[in-house]
Length: 179
Image: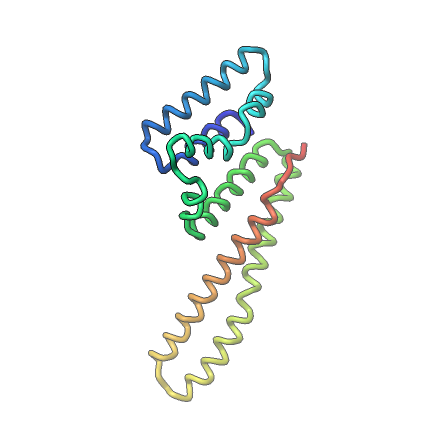
């Protein structure tokens, strides 16, 4: 983890506090990192000495008499999922910026395969749609047929997006830099 990521994670963890307080705490930690580096330690050693960001955030919450666990639980499932997704996307971009072109080509092929698998999921939905078409043709109601298509497309959209996001996080969360 680099200095900027460390400080940004700290600031994100203090999101329930006012902006000025967040800035104050981030500046305090930045000054601690600078003093540790000026005393002869490397950036990695300085960050290790400060500890994990989550522990530092917990200490700040305790100083302010706020329960970290309650705040952590209040984040919704969707918020946590998208936060993890964007963290994975940032990780992929970071790794790709440091990778060789051959390793980046492999990552792009993996993304293409994932898109292809997501498209293949559409096949059972097409079969069910056609089955529904033959049933609803008996009633001769175009409105009913259009509602049937809309419902199936919405269900497919939810399934496809969920599948893509979950597989993307699992495949790309632990990418390594390859030179």
